[in-house]
Length: 458
Image (cartoon, rainbow, N blue to C red; front, side, top):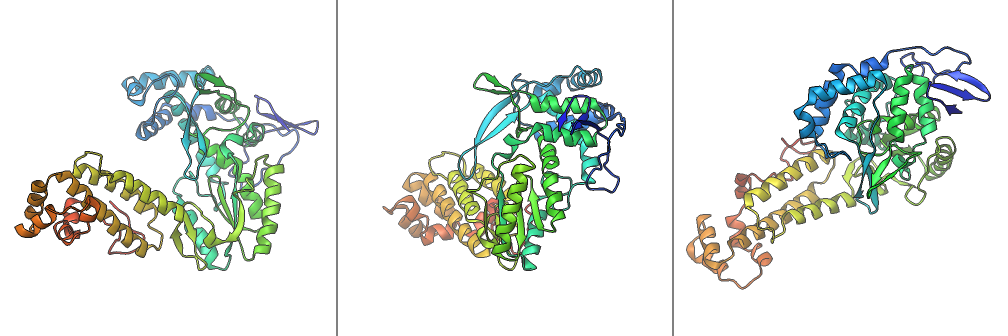
């Protein structure tokens, strides 16, 4: 099967023209020979100034760095309406050409590098406008078990669904890891799917131009024949379109599964069933979707031994924080509370609070009261150590302790100590001067909520 820029598909020597099959109640588009393409003015919707303005507001809110042209969001904002009118004309006249994306590598949590492609601000606006026009039609056909990068869906929804499946007795997990998924997306298959769903060849040419845009790395522009680089607003939607075929196959086979972007787990009752499912789905992914399954990282194991979106799922469906997530959290807090920063104590607390708000809201589904209580005590000790070291000299330490309410003789007893800063931080004087109440008055967010689980930190 091949694709041409007019939106036509050719298969087995015949010509099959794409038509918009979305919203007709069928999950799998029906292909009929010689059926005319249903024409539509989708490009007009994309190029509408209202749609472009919404796209620009979204790009502006997300901020982000500039592309290879060096233009920042702030600079684009100075003449935003002029830029939007220029974009509109280029889209309607067919003159718009995306620039190469700026290649950036970032470290993965579990090692290795992830390749990002940062489009220019103008290209990000156009990608966002395309995503806004395409998302409603694909939302009607996407699987209920797909949760990544979709409106009104989140990682918590995927976790709750997976937890419910395990609680029902599907406690063996098939953990699929797609090797460099965003870099391996097959352009021909993706464009063939889009051609079946979209009746405007101008939009197909525009999407293909984004897929084929080069990757500028170390001053060299590399051409791309596959992949949709992470970093652009359109890539998550295209990834869901590619993997929707996997979702439909899993539904056809009657499997219980959850997918968040390229993270996919399948829940079965027994290890033997899990091995059978792993073999069959791996064959489907590699032969049909032309993607690669990382066999070294994929596995069949009890749910409590598998990590999904930073969590593990216990045998009865209870959600827990994975060991790797705990380690990353403590490493981050260690970096924020290093004693040689030379920063104001209030500034350190503000930065810790900013990190904890996001962390607690994301991991608020987990049962981890004991570990959080221990971590909170450890964090407060590091903060006491940081505050004592800020005093530097004995007189300043004694003065700080007395100001906090300690008698003079007890304050000087600690100030004259020859112990190191970390040992001094666990002393009764330090704990009394910098009590839990004192930290609350300073504004430090508590890790353990008195309300319990599912907390939302304002």
